[in-house]
Amino acid sequence: MKMQPLNGKVAVITGASSGIGEAAARLLVAEGVHVILAGRRKERLEALATQLGTLATSAQVDVRNAVEVRGLFDFVRRQHGGLDLLFNNAGLGIHGAFVDSKADDWREQIDVNLLGLLNCTNEAIPLMKGREGAMISSVSSVGGRYGVPGWAVYCATKFAVVGFHDALRKELGGGKVSASR
View 1 (cartoon, rainbow, N blue to C red):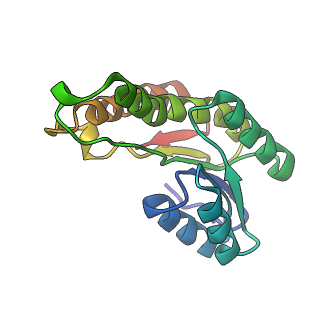
View 2 (view 1 turned 45 degrees about the vertical axis):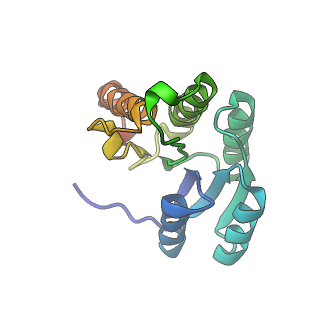
């Protein structure tokens, strides 16, 4: 497969205010990609966007909220006309034995790790059609392959990410949008 130049491409990174999301943003901007830094921590996103310069834009959004996610992708449509990369990186893990866990904690992990990913992917696909090399990439972690004690609910959400991407890759197989995890 021939590598496509990244200069001028457009990417949305969720969970962009730290860790893997921040590192991905730095690397993409260095390659000339316009990056929309999405996440809940407004101050951190704005500081990172300032550091990265004119190719970076911050967008405070909670991926669990479908209305906020729709607004994010409407912004991408208006500003850039389309999208080349969705990096579903937002995630939440709450450690502890399942027997001691609370339903509110289950819901929060499910909503961020799965519902947020579904919200973003659903809004992104229409913006990616017809764009050479367009890709949806999602973090599933080792928790999506192996059950880890103390992380039962987190692992359940990450196993769901793996299954979702396997099906999505097959659905998108005939088009130009690819899906990876």
